[in-house]
Image 1 (cartoon, helix red, strand yellow):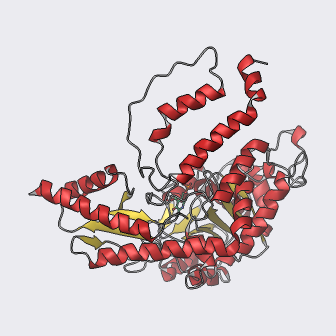
Image 2 (cartoon, rainbow, N blue to C red):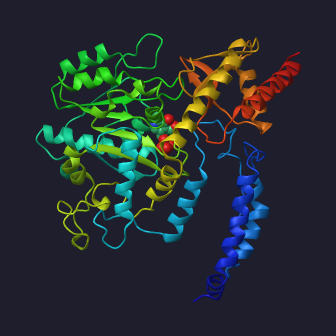
Image 3 (cartoon, helix red, strand yellow):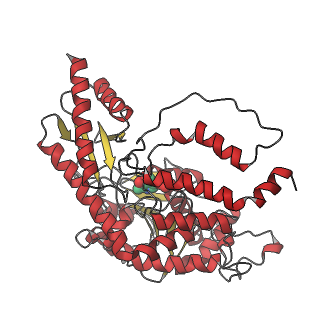
Length: 470
Ligand SMILES: Cc1ncc(COP(=O)(O)O)c(C=O)c1O
């Protein structure tokens, strides 16, 4: 064994203890860790011929990189839709790395991680109040979850047209209908050869980001049954609007189409009493995407897909390893290896299991309702401020706003200045053709105190820009 490797093995207790100190410091100081990182030039590192050993590398990391780590897991990083990592999920994640299982077999061949994944999926189904007619699995993120589901949908349409897409590739265009699909869904269509421009954009309801269900029905009437994939949004990124899932579920009783719901973060409203009606009807979907590294506050990278059991065969046809006798007969061997896009993968269920078991339904419910309240508090401030203006309704947990009376250039400058102060981090967006800033609340650590800090920061930045203006 290489000498440094052997000595690291000897010193594992000391090394892990040092790493623990770094992690503890990050957790304990997260309130003051800058919300965004200072960019720095790319360096040309030389690969060491003789390794430095883990202790020296950790020291190097601390001086070179640690201070550049931003508080993306902290309370005031509100860019994109960025969840944090609950303490229990971090514990589970450390152990997933330590045990380093290659999660593949549901029958427990080799290790138990596949069985535990299935058990964790059951917990999630219960959390989301979804029926046990769904099975599921873990992938890296909502993009891959959408991709996984749409791969099965593609196979289903092909079979309805009497051919096997997985075997022959696409023979005919697939009809896809959607109102306001997330970019990752569109990306999935492109990766699957369905084509990102082959979406029939169904008009939205007036003043909303939700599909017009009457227009969707008109489209379904014109297209042969069994040929169409309908994509629904359960939580758009700006105004967190939801398609009327109840109404679409009724269409399922009349027309035969594949129904996929992207509920990457919006699915979490399932646990909120006065919001859960937004996803009413979703249990009739053929497939559903939910991200774990967003509002469930599991560390990157983690998402789940749920697919109705009756489609299991189509899923295996799509994702099987068909020419590898050493992996067994895929049609008889329903393992993750044969129903996921990835073969080897990490034990993603463990951090989710830890968090669900540690905080239960109530704990995760509290995070979601608190985030919704906080978004509303910020929105209320903006609504009453003369300097800022809401650009989209704050339906759930995202606030879209702009500064009153500034040119686009100055709006951009406002955002750059705000983020460069590094107390809060928000990202730009466009709503109804209008440029805006958006703050997405999904972190378990965010409290009222952070809203007060944000208001101070917005006002201070406004003063800076105003002084520049005059
Ligand atoms: C509605 C929706 N779908 C899909 C995604 C893609 O998620 P991921 O980056 O985890 O792949 C996002 C990310 O923000 C999202 O908001």
